[in-house]
Every structure is written in structure tokens, then in C-alpha cells.
Amino acid sequence: MLQAQWEFSKTPNGETARHISDTCKLPMPISSLLMSRQIDTPERVRQFFEPRLNELADPFILTGMDKAVDRLVRAMRERERVMVYGDYDVDGITSTSLMYLVLNRLGAEVIYYLPNRLIEGYGLSPDGIDYAVEHGVGVILTVDCGITAVSEVEYARSKGIEVIISDHHQPGPELPLASAIINPKLIPPGTQIDDLCGVGVAFKLAQALYRALSQDEAELEEHLDLVALGTAADIVPLTGENRIITKYGLRQIERSNKPGLKSLCFVSSLMGRSITTGQIVFVLAPRINAVGRLGDAKTAVRLLTTRDEGVASEIAHHLESENQKRKKLDEETLRQALQQVKRNFDPERDRAIVLANEGWHQGVIGIVASRLVERFHVPTVMIAIDNGEGKGSARSIAAFDLYDAFRECSDLVLRYGGHKYAAGMSIAQDKIPAFIERFKRVAMERLTEDDMVPKLTIDSRLDPDALTESFMDTLEGFAPFGPQNTRPVFVTDNIQLAGNPFVVGNNHLKFRIRRNSSLFDCIGFNMGDRANALGSHSGPIDMVYVPERTEWDNNKRLQLRVKDFKLS
Image (cartoon, rainbow, N blue to C red; front, side):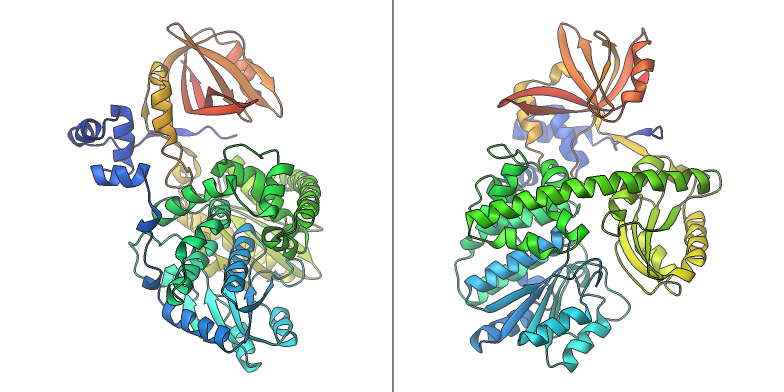
């Protein structure tokens, strides 16, 4: 693991921070944290700690919303069949489930379709359109996909089917000739809905439909569990609208009346526990994703939409089994990828990793690419080759825009899509060597040596004695945590170890520190290889950490999750 460079957040204005502290009755460290996140007035502090659903944006500020609603309402009135066409990841699955439930509740004749990842790949496909034709569909509503489906929309139109696009991905140079396009990327930046994911856009469409049909929008609150699932899993910024719907959605997951979600929480050992974004990302999302990665994602939509407890339990256990298979594939693919990295990647020469292999499962290469980015801190592309064609999945670092890089290589690929941090593409096998050379050249031109050093941003210094129950209560009010609203990170200098460090689980480092008369439990995930150096050091250490409460046997206790440390 690369040694991170420690950096401090910009120091807020002390006078304003003191005003916020006095006015809102908050400790100065909390006030400074809020200031660093541009929460710098009493009203913004109130909105941050007490967000309200009535503060959500008007759905009709999204371009194309009027047309989309009018067309769907007409389809309902004329008894046209509507097909919700989604994607096979958690965002696409929750988007499909949400719109299927909403349209069904409003009286539409509705079916859904998700492409098979291994056969059709991402996005609106001719096979999916043919399925719509066979089932008498008049309108296709895409969710979490469709913004680049120019030829596919034209194909649907040739079959007499209108398409409404609901998406959040980056538009290409040409927009499809759809009946309506709803995408926050098509409105001027600066609104609180800029960063909605697919299910967030679908939720705005649901709001607009309820409003147009004079229905009680409060009914939609029961579906915020789906919105929170997709939003947290898609790793979009948890600010603005995303933060509000996720905060309320997490509570809804805990009390959800959906048998599928309850069964999923049960098999994941989360039943009866407070649900966090971390548990979505690392526990629930991988299980929902598993069937989409290994084949047919429609099973996951059935799970989230069924009202049958028995069906829900059966599917949840199936997802658990599929997730175990996926983990084994992950481990084997990572092992093979690391062998290739050892042979082909030279950090002195390369500023990107591009790997290709026949036999890799295209459903897991994105996960492995993420792990390589964590380990080597360079943009990474993994390509699974099958029958002369490669399917690529890429992940990136903050300083490198994958979508722009793929655009630089567009003449070499069959198709591509995504955004700055995650993207995918298809490529003919004989073009892969040229793509590798071009992509690496783009990375060399755009990345500096400093960009390749991981940065660890620290919010402020803190004395652990300040970690009182009330301080932790306020700190937990910063949740839900995610991009642009991460858990606050602190550093404490010159602290003394208490006892010997030891390794637990899968290479995790555990130890205790002493501050005055208090002892604090610490854990450093994947830091077991640093146990010997820490144990043989007799002096104090400087430690960067996140304070959090952990839950065990229904008891919560304070733990410091170590991000890094230096031997003083």
C-alpha cells in the first residue's frame, strides 16, 4: 500500500466559526468542520442537521420533465403498455423497481426489462427493443441508461415504439431523438440536483407524475428505501438533494414494508440494526449486484418488488449464494491481475494500468479495477476478452477523468460511456494493443508524479479527550456519509501506545492508545503488515483516524478507525 501524503483542509474563518459555535450551541471543532463544508450560516446548519423532505427541489426544473409526464399520463389513459428498461447494477435495479411500483400504483399497464450483462452489455439494446415489440409495448421508459443510445432509439422508433430517457450519465455529442429526455447533466450547473444518480432522477419523475395526477406525494416516502439504496451504492456526492433523500431513505430501510428488503437485511445479519451508507455499500449492494454481475439482474427487481414473503426469502438466499460465488471470482481475478501488474506495470514509466485477459468474467472486473486503484493509485482499465471482443471496466483517481480519456480513444473502441471515476467500453480484440498504448499516453500527458501520490485529507487536530458522548452524538449528525460529505478525519500528535498491537481477521491491525487516564481502542483495516514496526517502536506516534461508534451485541462503543500513522 502506498504511503499517503497528509494534507489539512483549508482553515475556516475563525470569527465566523465562533459565531456559528455561539449561535448554534456547538463545540468549536464541530463549527470548524461545518465551515470547511460551506455550511456557514445558522440556517444552513439547521438544514444540514435537520433536512426536510419539503425542501426537495421542484421536479419540473429538469428539462424534459413536462414532456415525459405528459407522454406517460397519455399512455395510462389510453392503456398503452409501458416498459421500464433499466441497468443491471444497484442503481439501475432500484430505478427499475421504483418506477415499476410507482407506475403500477398509478394504474399503468407496466412491465420491466433489464439487459443480460454477459449477452447484451450495458444500455438500451436491440434485444430489449425486440422484447418490447413482442409484448405490445407502446412506450419504453429508460432508467439509469439511454442518454447515448442514438441508434437504439432510432431502431425503437422504426418499430413504432416511443422512448422516454431518464438518465444521469454524461451525454454524448449527439442526443437520441427520444420523446423526452430527463437528465440533470442537461440543466445549468449549480442546483442541488446536479449529482442525482439514476434512481434519484427516477424519483423526481415519480414526484412529477404524482403531482400531475393530483396524488398524495407522501405515498412516495415508502419508496425512499430504494432511493437510498441506489444513491449510496452509486457513490454519488451525498450533498444537496442526495443527502436529504438518503437520510430519510436509510430510516425507511429500517422500517421497510418490502418483504424483499427485509429478507435481504435478514440474510445479511442487519435485521434490527441501524442502517448506514457503509452497510449499503459493503453489505447490501454487493448482494443485489451479484446476480447482475453473474447473469440475470431481473431476479433482484423481483426481490425488491414482490409482496410475497416466501418468494422474498427464497430470492434473498439465492442472492447470498450468488454473492459468495462472486467473491471467489473476485479473488481469483485479482490474483491473476496482480501477476500481470507485476510483469507489465512500472510506476517509474507508467501512469495507468491497462490489463486484458481471456477468461475473465466481465461482471467482476470493475470490482478488481477498484482494488488495483486503491493499491497503486493510478487509473485502471480491466478488459475481459470473449469471442474476439473485449468488455472493459475502468476506475480512476481524482486527478484523471476517465470519460475524457475514453473520448481520446474513441476511434479505437466500439462504444464507451460512464463518468469521471467509473466508465466502461467495448473494443475489438485486435484493437486492444493500440488502446493500451493510447490510454497510457493520455495518462502520461495528464497526470503528474504528484497526482499519483494518494492524499489523506485531515479536517483538524483533536485531543481524544474531546470525544465525549455529546460530541459523538453531534458528529453522527453529519451522516449519511459519502463523497463530499465524508466522515470527519482527525489527527492527534504524540500519543502513546498501551500494550502490544496484534493482527485480527483478514490482516487488520488492532491496538490501544493512552491519553491521560483514558484508553482508546484502535483498528487499522488492512494494516496488519505494519504491526511489527509499530510493536517495536517505543516512542509516541502521530495518528490520523475517524472516531466512530461500533455496535456489538446491541451495545455501542467508541472506536478509532485508523487511516494512517507515523512513528514519532
